[in-house]
Length: 93
Image (cartoon, rainbow, N blue to C red):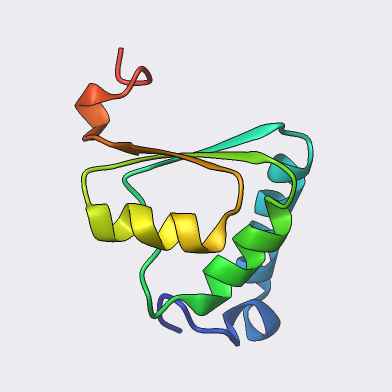
């Protein structure tokens, strides 16, 4: 198993349980906040799951990388992008 492995959720029950919990938490939220998660290009599985789970929700992203912010903008239609480090977020206090 490796990050982004599309078969992980199907073959590893613990991974499937984690993704189920992620979907559940997002389903009861109006806003989803990502801080410092790069959503790497190779991890299409996570991008697909998260884009589906976050459909119709505000996706707030805080990351110092322009490339990362561009990736979120391409995947999530309703995104609020902030080029900042964790310490610069309102969540750091």
